[in-house]
Length: 119
Image 1 (cartoon, rainbow, N blue to C red):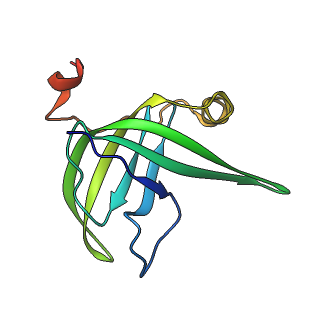
Image 2 (image 1 turned 90 degrees about the horizontal axis):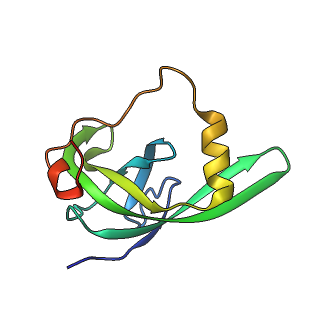
């Protein structure tokens, strides 16, 4: 069963928000730290905020959880969640394309890759 959640990428220290930190983002998906475990193949909606001098915007993105692993960080144990986009607004997509640089890191190998048709 798919679960839906709406969260912001900024830190949620001391609140009941699920996402605690955005680790990486590109045109294919994003990796973030979460306070609670998410089921692989869950459908998730997130709010991603971008800002530039004099301009900020909040984007709603949709994707599937393709990996969720326990991770040790400075705040204690969290879950490192990899989300693959299935809906990405065109404006955010163009911002992310412009940010891509040669040699950027890809996503880590996924144990559940066959579920999503990835090799």
